[in-house]
Each structure stands twice: as C-alpha cells, then as structure tokens.
Length: 395
Image (cartoon, rainbow, N blue to C red; front, side, top):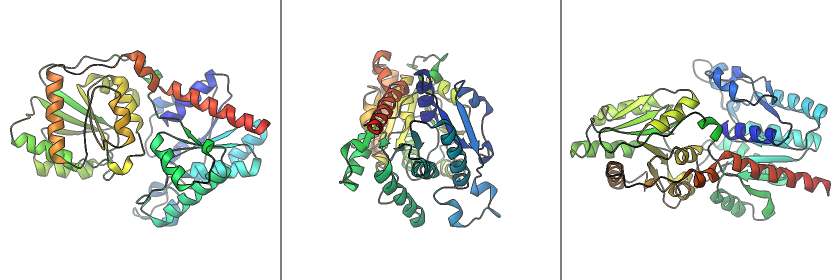
C-alpha cells in the first residue's frame, strides 16, 4: 500500500490527475481509520465490492480452493472491472497501472486494457512465479497465465530489484529489453515527518526490533531463536542488556511455543501491531533493527530495508550475501550480515552487533546520501516510465 500511496502523492504534486481503484474496506477484518488521512486531498479513491474468502465465505474456517484463486480477494475482479471501465469511459486516462502482490489487481488491469486499449503498466515488484512458489499448483497456473499476458500486452513491467529483472529476462528471452523497468522500493519521507532519530546507547539495554510480518518460510526465525538460546546459555547475553522485539509478526501463535521451549521469553517479546507512523517512531527509538530474508527471496528487497536505512540505526540483516537485499542494506554502512540458515554465524553477528553499538564503531550514513532511497526518487522514475508509454502511443 505505502509504495502506491507515495507514488500517487508525488504524481499528484506533479499535476497528474490520479484515480485509485481499490477494494471495499469491508474486505479487511481490521483496518486503521487514521491511515485514510494519508490519502492526498483531491485523489479520487473508487472502492468496489470485495470480501476476504477466508473470513467472509468460509464455513467453520474452510472454503474451496477455487474461491481463493488467484487470491483470497478474487471477488473484487468483477466489480473492479465494472467500476474501472466506467471510470475509463468517463475520464479516458493516459495509462493504467496495476500492482502486485494482490494478483487479482493485475487481472483487472489486463482486462481493462483489453477492453479499452488504454496502455497498461504492471508493477510486479517481485517475481510472481518461481520454482517453489506459489506452492499450490492451481494458483501457480493462474499466476503463470498473468505473467504471460503481462509480457504480451503490458507496455512496461516494473520490478523492485535488478535480480528480478535478470530472472525474467531469462524466462522470457524474446521479450524486448525495454519492457523490464527497475523502480525500487524506498522509504516515504512524508511518514517520517515530525520524528527524530535518537542516538544509540553505549551501555545498558540494547533493543533489537523487527517490525512487520515474519513469514515462516521466507523469514523463518527458528535459527535466530536457537542462536539467542545458545548465547544466553553461554552467558554472552543477558535479559538486562539485550532484548529482541518482534512487532506484528502475524504468526505469534507459531513462534510463542518456540520461545517457551528454548526458554528465551525473557529475551524475545512478541508485540501487537501498531499504527504505521507509530511503528516508524519505534524504529527511531530502539538501538538496532532486525531484517530477515531467506535465500529463496534473493530477487526481492522489502520496503522495510529502506525504512531501516532511513532510520539511521545499526542493522542486523540475516540474509544471503548474494541476494539483492544484502546489496541494498550494505549501503547503510551500519549493517552486519549473516545467513538466516546458519546458527553459528548468527551468533557471531549478534555478538558483533552488541560490541559495535557499545563501542560506537558504526558510522551513520548522512541524510544527503540516504535521500536517494526515498520513494519520491522512485516516483520520479515511474513518471519517466509513464511519459515513455504515452510517447509510444503518440508515435
């Protein structure tokens, strides 16, 4: 959401007229009304009928597979097409942009393009299909269909990192090189307004924060927990000096028993979700930030990585050195990197992090250099891509 929000805000400031086609708020079990204030004044948001299959159409928690293909919000597709078509006939926009990870959005974008001829830009962000993803073969088949339609009909396809572009160029070698466009994730300076970065402590308790969902496969914290247990048993870390805060993991029920079994509930706390701006403020208040990204996500860079860089705090990045996430996070000059699947190296990284914080051996990247990671910069890239697409139509 925040990637698109920042793009919309910047485009509007550059005199584009933007209409956002989105789902009814009833599609979500929980949402924060305060976030509606983030929508720029003058931007029209069209919300159409949508429900979450898992919550609204299930019986005793069960529902048939076809009801969640390509995703749990597939009920949005008919209403999205109808509403989108009405808006296109009324306003005749210069371009349609659809964005993943809700795959049904790409289906709506594709159908509207085919019905109206308005050029279509597909913001894939990350690879939709890989060897082991999606795991459900029916979902994978539909995702593959979406990819092929986008390669054939979209004017541009955008990705957040170079590795994803390389991956798709190998999969679709006959596609023109100019189809693939790099528009990285970034941080939104507007959301950081009013917040100030606090200095890291040289002594006392060190708080290591992970903000956001921890996927059991793509960001599996199991070996991190084991490393913490080992360091505690060895007497290298104590609860009075070191604490890990896992904020809004979405899988607390799965991780809580692990923490109990390893006897590290005094070192690791599972905390509930908080509003987005409060989450950013927390990043600025703690002593260090935690990033988790498995090697099977080497072609992805989470937006969190850029927010962490903007926070100007030490970063413990448990990710593959060969991946795009590592390439980005290294630029913070405050990152300590270790593989997510190696207990011994995680232990060394934690000890190194603590030592560097206490001895103040990390250099903060100046804001002048951090600004290149802002979403305003990426929105400018998007504007160039849109202008290029319009120019292609006028030839």
